Image (cartoon, rainbow, N blue to C red; front, side, top):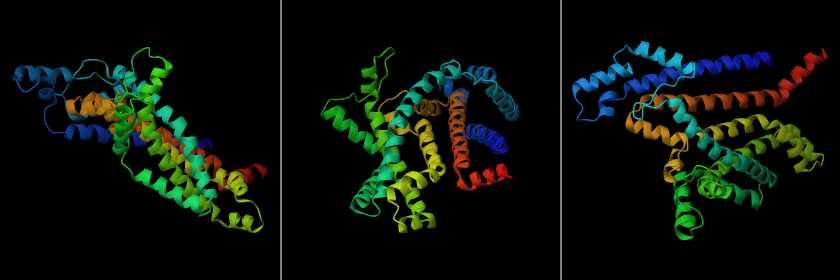
Length: 321
């Protein structure tokens, strides 16, 4: 296990280094002059040249990349071009909002979706299984902006139950926070629950088609016992990967939801920085999102390795020898 973790950590570091190369190269290839865009179209050439010198844009690309890379490793994300504030402070402010949104959605959606997937798998092709599978498939194929828009029209505009803008005021109470987060969290719960439930149903269904499950059914073992005592444990690895990808999506892929509800999260910060050509913020957000993906996939691979019955049998054989 130690060797496995060491290999995965080294591979994760290699992936993040390659991502840093792609992020920096992508920002370099964007058209336009960053200094000119920051100062506006009426800036004088002298002012543009002075800003380029201040930002270090007059240095070779390789030197700027190395300075940015070593600074990022040391925790220095640079300074925003537009606000002239440290990028780390901007990330910390938005990260707490994104963590709150993603955490609330995960706590609700993951148990709900896995439970729903297990219930559908117990249906064994019956009416409930077919109906539930159709509903889950339809929801997973529905664009999130449509769900968010319908939620705003129904619960904010027509019924006036919840605010249409998820604005978090400093020092807000518990119920005020719940009201502000209800619509964006509900939208994400619907999307994530549908995706994880569909994959859970497929994973458990494939496991129930294996010889051990068919033999147990022929011997009269109830289907729920096979699922609860055997199939669910074997499904931990694949389910961990599905959950990891969906949680990573909650951190970095909720641009549309944050935009519709005007939620001050990391994804919206990155879109605003792209429009303003604030490259230090764009690079920092991209690396942060990539790091979240890599860490979650690393955790999922570790869980899959722990709960893999073939690897468990191998380890047990080595211990017995």
